[in-house]
Length: 401
Image (spheres, rainbow, N blue to C red):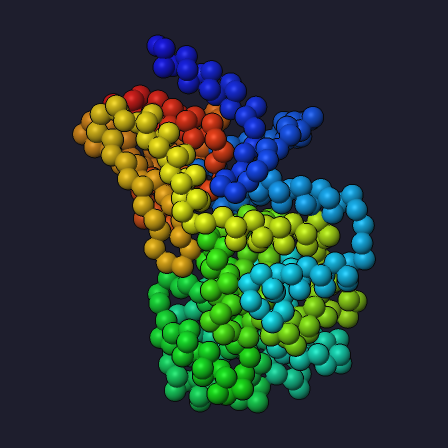
């Protein structure tokens, strides 16, 4: 009974907790004077799933929010801000040039358009009509994915290849770019180093979508060093910047062309892909902060969140927990929760549904990524939410014991 009172007390105070950042954050966020979501009739939830777009991305670090507030209240000319932020980001990651975009998808659209037109103003005005211009994008068949439609927004056509012989045979005077996805679910027939070398030999710009390869932020530096002519990242997930921002990095000439394709230029195909002053500055500060936080510090913060959840589940019969690091380029920490169904009569799907319908609601990692297992991420969880999540899971599992 005492534990039940503790749970109810925790639930009642769940959303009055200070919004603390993860490792490297030095400040807490002042609570809002108004509960805007409640006024709109919206129900908040605890994100133990991760920085998914459908869940609003990652929680921005406090210093990022402060930078965005500064930019909202202090005005400079946008071109000068774009220049200065781009130069600073390029210095941080070792790129020739950089620009902040309205997300990784926008980076792909702008980078593709840049490679298709190479600064030719008449061709820029012509897009998405590609009559008489380079409009083919070489892409490995294994690299086809949900977001490759962004490659065709400017009017390009995708040309699939499976090996180096295919590339040599299909590259022509119509080829604008060679595209590479990192990582893929099915691997590569042509690995990154070979693909870059082939593109250089054939005189074709190479582009890499590395949007999901962070955290850690250091992976941006490593990605730039691989040698792609252009490479892009999502800003609102692993980098914990503004949700609607991204990065496009690479060759100075191509970045210059990409900028001409974006707002505020009226002849650009990306005119609607605006980036605010708040996002320019917020993205820069997010990258600066991310590069200061070591992977060890980040994992230490997340391990502490998981330790508190595990402590709530320790005495639940039949429950097993394990903390593990994800495979692949992005290094994320997850907590896997399993149980003996002879003791606790419920399936993982049952638990997901009960967590979703709980008050407060809790979301866990999507089954498509977890292989149908219950896995939690601490990327978006605050201090205090961890214990609450553990208490909620404990209560649901015990109710089915």
